[in-house]
Length: 69
Image (cartoon, rainbow, N blue to C red):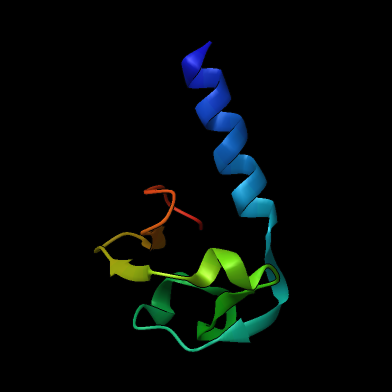
């Protein structure tokens, strides 16, 4: 049940980012048009850190300590 709750939380956070607008990224090869999504909810963008791997990039939240996208 805890894993399901965690998954639900991550999905909600993922849905809180916009894909219509775009922002610069250090991992342009991992995003459509070379631009990462912008945040709709600016509270989620506090204490974030972009992490680039060889196969994917993500934005990590320092608040929730989970990936946001």
